[in-house]
Amino acid sequence: MKKWMMFFWGLLMCHFAFAEGNEANDSKENEFTIGVQIRPRAEYRNGVLYPRAEGAEPVGFINNRARMSMSYKRDKLSLGLSAQHVGVWGQDPQIDKNGRFILNEAWANLDLGNGFFAKLGRQSLVYDDDRILGSLDWNVAGRFHDALKLGYENPQNKLHLILAFNQNDEKTIGGTYYAPGAQPYKNMQTLWYQHIGSKAFNASFLLMNLGQEAGSTEEKKSDTKYLQTLGTNISYQPNAFSLYGTFYYQFGKTVASKDVSAYMFALNASYQINSTWKLMVATDYLSGDEGDPGDYKAFNPLYGTHHKFYGTMDYFYASPFINGMNPGLWDNQIGITYKASPKVTCLLNYHYFLTTADVYVDNKEQDKGLGSEIDLQLNWSIMKDVTLSAGYSMMFGTDAMQAVKGGHPDSWQDWGWVSLNINPKVFFSKW
Image (cartoon, rainbow, N blue to C red):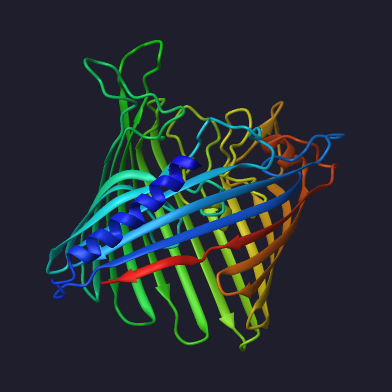
């Protein structure tokens, strides 16, 4: 921590020296901003990520994110730098020398003129509704990519090309990329285009080519398999009604060299009844695989924010199915939002989950219904830059849920949490 405080004050001193040296040049404006986030979250877990087994005890803990973000802007150039420490209260000793601060953002954005730009370095990749590429802000650590983003934007069109190439370390000869403990892919190329037709309508298209290593540390041999994801998002929001549609298709190869033919679609509709009440219905369908020798048919939502879509208890895609299964998911939900005041909002969602592929246990076909989840959340804006959130969820699983996720269907599964998000801008200067 001492090193980071010295770094912080050093940056401020450099800022004042730089500003004083550039007072004569007032034709271009410079901005320097420092923001701080402190976000503790207390959790009670009694069947999160996986159903708990019969007799298993619940657990409680408090995790925390301490993040400091800095940004600099001037004509044609902007920079972002963010360092964070994440962990659980009590995880570190009182006298601690491990220095587990990491950079979750470190990027530069170059304005090349006429709508063209280049952004390179460690950055979040957030597109459309976070379905395939999302920030995963719910997770205490978040998610980042090391990438180069090239783009063109005007008021009606946005076109981005994202390029990434990952390696475990500087190499001399040979070797391959070992994903465990590092980024989950060797290389990635993504092309994204969005057309903003009007205030109420926009459509986007995404094509991703993902290279994943099939080699192992024992083989010492590189064997990259490529998976392609192609899809579209359409948003229509006239007045109080909104409609959002998504479709993606995957093809290419799995790491195990199986041909892929998988798809997903989602439809979300909501209606703002008045300033207080809002209704929502949605369905998400992700194809599953039955373990046949033919094509692999389970859709992989990759690096999206799964917590946002498939129930907040994170049974699906935020955690894997058991025994190598991937039977897909059909999630049907209905929700209601109640705005009690300008500062207080309540949300209640009901999910009913099914598999999309047949599941067999001891050669006996299981029912596709996995069970129901109820999610309740309260958000209270206490003051500027300070928000208190709390939630409680219950899962009512079936025998089919036990077959694909484990646990015991007769065991009570629930989860509760309280989070305080303090996120002020502590320093701003313009010269």
